[in-house]
Image (cartoon, rainbow, N blue to C red; front, top):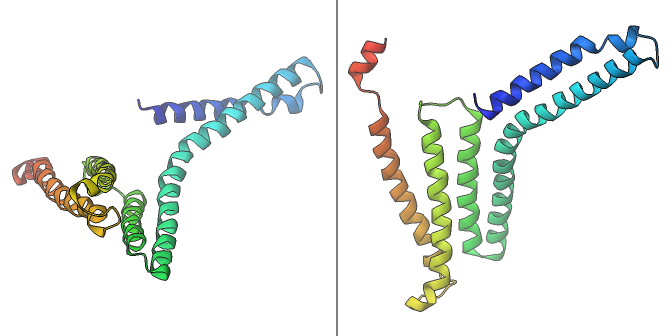
Length: 187
């Protein structure tokens, strides 16, 4: 059982508890022992329901909220780059737009393959590696006689990484593909 499933079970149990005891304070003597205890059980149970709902739903909010924030900020930085003539801002804004768009596309549609998580994980890890490599190349570009603010050290790692990622994804798509014979037997 995953942690999300455990939290969901806790959410349901707390909701059932609240449902089972909510009527007791209504019929018990007001201010009496049963009224107070059942009331506190209800309050605690509903607190657990609220917190677990935020935790479980928060995954979706974070999964959609962060890419949406990246999408909006990417459009803004691209427009700013176009306005001031800064090609680097425009390019990075476009990269952010494509990245956030693909993340939103991933979270807003049902999985297309059984290994969807593998490809999302691989893309995210390669993307963060490209960012790390870009920072290294930009900082060390002057040692190679390339200006740090030249477009080459900023874009080259991304281009090479994206091409490599494309080949790597295709390799694993073929590797994870179900052979036709197994598909026929499964049907």
